[in-house]
Length: 250
Length: 228
Figure (tube, rainbow over the protein chains, first blue to last red):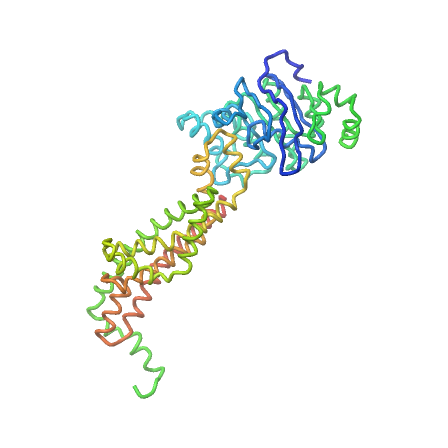
């Protein structure tokens, strides 16, 4: 394990969060606190609300009730400037979400230029460094469709990093990838974990959880049924539903 | 003419002697047609995009008004709209020049269709695109300008090109006004010479303007296919 459970300050808190889609109660009162430098994995059977939870954290999905507090700012408050909050909270999607009309380099440069008002040269230099970091220096001028899935996801990670976020959210970052491409994306994510990036990851990649994740949340039917250090949750789960789920996974 | 004979066809429809000394009138008509077409294409594309953006804004009242506008445009023959604007509005003390009347009517009608095309294009873009842009801290407006509109343009280019072609042909409604555009010029010569050759020639000129438009669109589509 790279990270130990940090004794650092809380960066993101969720208080009694619920989300309904019509009559369907997807999240039933989630509360949790995420700390600086932590890498938290969220696991659970499909339909348990993992994606909904992580999408609520940066308000891409609007919660039905409850509070989300990021660095002391309640982002569930309608008067909060959500765009300002999102600058500090990156998100990586299952389906990459690269902008198809822009090159890899332009994908990374766009938000720093338009949102952070960086100069073209500054944004470009930083973007090139980020491409190097994810091992894609030679793909700067390629369009997304000219890249493999793994390469696209690495560009998407670089694009999030370009905003220098304080937290990175990953929504099943490897589940749309062919098996041979999972490794290259996980390697980049493990590198980030090593560098101390605060990460919240919805993923079933047991190797990533074992090697890089400090804590695991188990979500079943919209509730957190288990929350503990990765090793403990993976090796000796206490809740029978966790055992059952991990049994299918391992 | 007692009997129609195919041997008379060139003499009647492709009689170049008729055209002698008349080309300058026809070309000045072509120039007017181009002026109306370019102004109308630019404006109706702009307003069409605006209509689409208002439509996807999901304001119920605005949407109802826009749907009414769209249905109105679908049902109204463009020439009737022109008669209302040019001959009717002066009764309300609103007077437009023939050129302005033509542009107003063409833009009004075609913006509705172009708006529908753009709306379909924007709605066809994956939701992840908006989510990705917003999660980077981009505002709604920035997401529209930098992410959705450029992609929508590529998606709707073929139907846009169709609309633009339609606009060029609709400039011919000006024949009912005091504008000597291409078709009117051809009609004048044709009536004077009592021969349809000028009309045939005007058709060839329409074709000559439309071909570059088609070629440019195909080029853009090819680029889009590569980049997408």
